Length: 243
Image 1 (cartoon, rainbow, N blue to C red):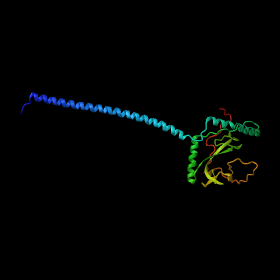
Image 2: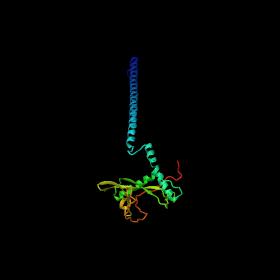
Image 3: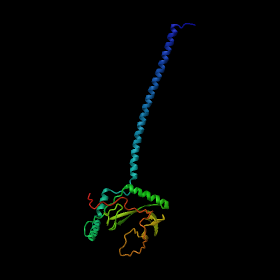
Image 4: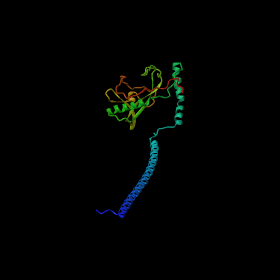
């Protein structure tokens, strides 16, 4: 076997070193390119995230504006129409107190209902109405008055002689070519029963001089499918409420 010369050994070493330096340089270039590309990607991601955030804020504002109901009134409008009722409330108080001679009656000016109770009520109306095949169009609020002997479901009589409201779902009904939203409930057979003038519910002020010829059927107070809500765990403020 021929022994390698000094020159050939040197050449082999040089070739190995050159090759190593080439690969090292190539790796360094690849690493530099990767770093630059990564930085570029990060800049693009940051730019896109900023754009997305701006779009989300813009869409959020538009969504907020779109969800604002049309019947919202201002604080000042609410105060103005509330104060406009003062004279009528004073008149009610004067008439009622003149009948009792104790001056203790204060007319109800607001009602409180727990929102969870209202949601439960709406779910209850939807469920029973669907079973009855009724398409509910809305709610009607009826003004009413508790009698002198009224006792609430909690057992107290502090709301006796006070105004109240009760709520009933509505459906569309055609009267004289006009579409009206009439309150309804369900009888014990699960059939629709209207809260209309034929059943003693007028949607307008009744003339006291007119004789009421409505024939009212006496009903059981425990209608199992009734959709009419009154207390809903709510009540007027107490008589000494001053805040």
